[in-house]
Image 1: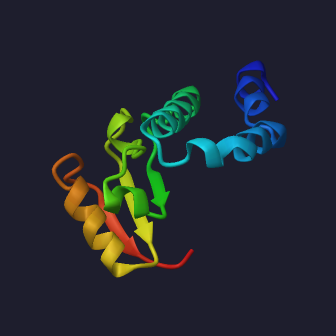
Image 2: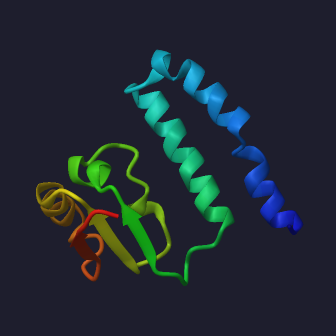
Length: 111
């Protein structure tokens, strides 16, 4: 494992997520917690350089409900496929993201 990959994986260990989950009930649903979670997602995704790859986004609930921790609009990539088991969720996600990602494909499927 090279140094770059080690820095990515060292932060997201089981101990890290155990600590977050232990205290999550205090903050879950608050704007601060949502912003911190979004910040963590974006830092992680920035480190793995997704600019030139096709991204498969499964579970479109956040994108459908237009929650504050939707990280897709922050990515520097326009090659997305969104997938969910629910037709209604896929329809809502498509409606919310169509103006931002007109070329995004949506699929109803169970992975």
